[in-house]
Amino acid sequence: MSEITEKQLVLPALYMMAKSDNGFISTSDLISQLTTVMHPTGIDAQILAKRKDTHFSQKVRNLKSHDTLVKLEYATDYENGFKLTQKGYEYLDLHKEAIDYLLQDEFNYEDVKTAFDDISSSGKNKVLPIKEVISEGRLVTRNVQVRERSTRLRDIAIEHFTSNGVISCHCCGFNFPIFYGLKYGKNCIEIHHVKPIFQYEENTFEQVVENALENLLPVCPNCHRVIHKNHIGSESMSLFINEMKTHTPLNLSQPAR
Image 1: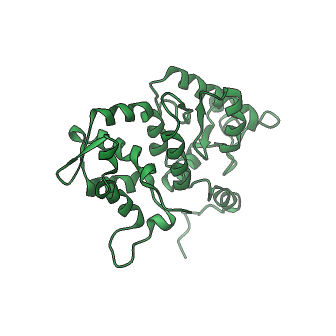
Image 2 (image 1 turned 120 degrees about the vertical axis):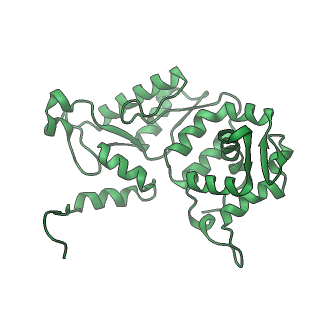
Image 3 (image 1 turned 90 degrees about the vertical axis):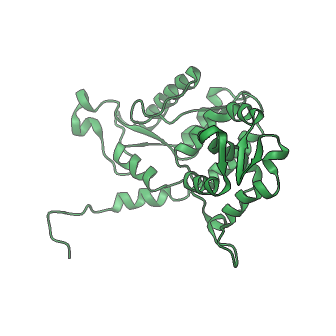
């Protein structure tokens, strides 16, 4: 695992500025907020020798000391931080939907870094994130075409993972129709994105599907919430699934020993 680069931090830094008052954010707040949403791991999470900074926080500070955002004209130096410029807003707007997708769904840190490389080099209107369709209505996108493709992807994934007319949670094995009956249990399964899935203009939807099916899992809402709450990424998904298959639920009616 290599350290995060300043280039990979540009878009998430602009994103945090846009969410703050008047497009201004202090360097310390930027470090705190990016750490919260990106969950750095590996060398980036390690403390620098004789310093209080991690490798990650130092790279964020370098955006200031190296004038990275100022040279790109995406932000100006402002007090102890940055203020977003009009050019910064315009650049961010090209990719905002993709950034929403990456930073709100708690993907594996290494996958997020790679995705930011792809996004920043893709050019205008190149990236269309295919959203994760979970808990009806939770994720909303402004792009009608993306919503339609999300629904198509969900339908294809359900068909792909259905065996002998049955689709169960890939983690714990729970099956909605068996437990609730077809009347109430139909179409309740959720589809989890193990890795980010994007569609580029040069690729057809059918080409994306082949890659997508390798990075999707049918899960029940309980497992889905546990996955996101515990930041279970692509590198630890297999371990989580194996643990769930061999897990013996606690009997909370019995006194703890």
